[in-house]
Length: 164
Image (cartoon, rainbow, N blue to C red; front, side, top):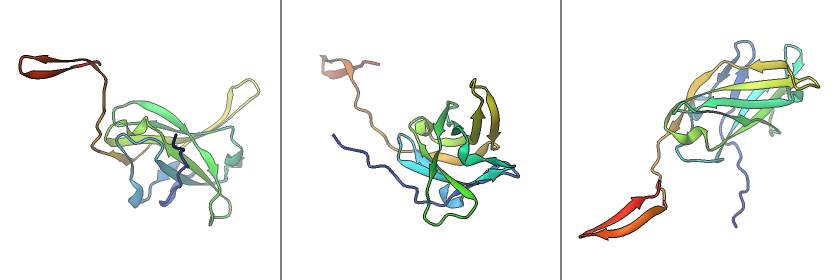
């Protein structure tokens, strides 16, 4: 069984600007996946560690909420990353794009969330970026080997009855 060795971000950082609540996407990194990919792209966000006196690195929940080109929504967690040449006062967060987002080609939307909860699970802090619409998923050629209900000959024709 093959082991997945993890991936590393090789692109420029996406920057979270707390004042405007926008995510600034580097021009060279606007295509974030190709249809059919799964856990093959990592995006790193650069964000001030302190936003309005709140330490983002200590938030109980950090995630990206997204909507793909088909209109399906989902979430992926953000992990704190150590970067070699980080800027003082910044935190770096990684997002591994899962299988749900690159389900279809086209523009995708996402926002970044930071949240804390009280001892009863009630949200007591929830900071959200504005919706980012600057990224897309590229088309690809994918083949699927499927299961068939039946394979038979009808006259001179070989018929594959679709199982689905």
